[in-house]
Image (cartoon, rainbow, N blue to C red):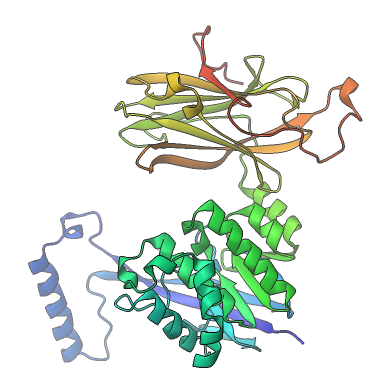
Length: 435
């Protein structure tokens, strides 16, 4: 018997567009806003049955459209898709936070959900008081909450701040406590949105382990995340949501591969004009290219030769300790190489102007297979300048003499200082030659 059954589920929102958007009316003073509200109230009192469309264009937006699926007890389901695909709307309906426009949802069991930081918390109450409040919202008795209290506090690692009002908590502390409550009060269904991305890496790993333990006890987990590696590791099934519909249902690994194949740029080179380049007034990303022997890769990279990932940036305003980070992921979204230009002290503070940098991955670091490159730039106060995911891709093949030396789908390298070499591109006027 299904623990969740969804039939012809749809959700419609009405979106109002200001007809004056882009004009001087877009930015109004408080006086103008109050006057506009007063006029609207007068019109509704005078003509209560007539819609107020004086300055508004109405649009129907279907966040979900005719969803049908079933989830069995103990299933670990990963729900993935682009931003705006309808994932969060689906979870809100399953959590009974919002009502569907049409269709029906049958849920057999108690649901605990963690959709936003601090959901169900009262900011004026302490962490201790919010544990009892949140437990009560989830339908737990006081004795049951008291029995689990010490485990919740230990898992959340915020014992020192337990009697502090949660309005003084950081977003990371909110997540720690909220997840600890949701996961330890033994719901039949645990629903987790991308909120876990707020926590630090160690706590994320701890949460994933807890969700796995929960599922092994026969409870059901629904997990929305852009971390494809976590989805594959945690989930047994997957749903790919596109434009409010289920585009694919199957194994988590198969669904992730389908999703990544539809989002990856099938090219070893990408460039931007200065106006369209990602970044801000500090720095802009101009190009990203995969090379071997200082030449762009046109076919496959050979496992026996170093792979160079070449980055071109325009520094508009020199910033102290400006850094570039490259992430190389495999075809399942798992990060294989994570490296930063901060490893080379000479590259930490580039001057104003155009700069050409390259990160060299040594031979035999990557085995045969497909790889995806993402790039991030930030400065020490954790301000992100640009964060471009899945910008380019390339594949690595075995040389003829290397066939059979390594098992298929294994990874031969490791990351860390000294593994990837960062340097400036030198010796050529054009960087790198455009393929």
